[in-house]
Length: 172
Image (cartoon, rainbow, N blue to C red; front, side, top):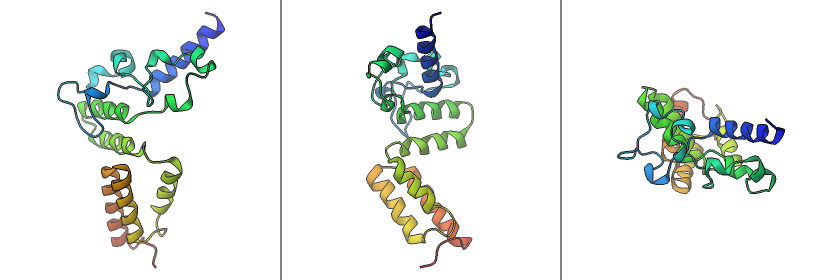
């Protein structure tokens, strides 16, 4: 196998290990579709359901080639995980009884819309003694209203209550 083919194969294998997209019409973020629910039989999705695989920007797995990377037709945004991929993976996790993992995947799917810098700010705000209860509630409201991240908003509100009970909030 020549070097270009080998590198292209490596790129495809990396993509297969990172993604597992499906058609947007098959299910929505945070909800389970009616007939095309992913199960353990579909895993790994890239092998068993390659027709479901698309990047965050809508490219198909077959579009992710070394040639397209070198020609500038594939950008870093083209290989970021999408909410739909995470939802499929959550469905697979549920099909094998891994409810907590499925919930984590859905929480992650909501955060894709949140800029990385803001996620780091929120992470720091969640550290003990860094925020007041009101500040945490404001973050939860922002996540819910600006990014439609309802699962994460509920998580932060719960954290604020627990921090209050354990005396881990910053005092005004």
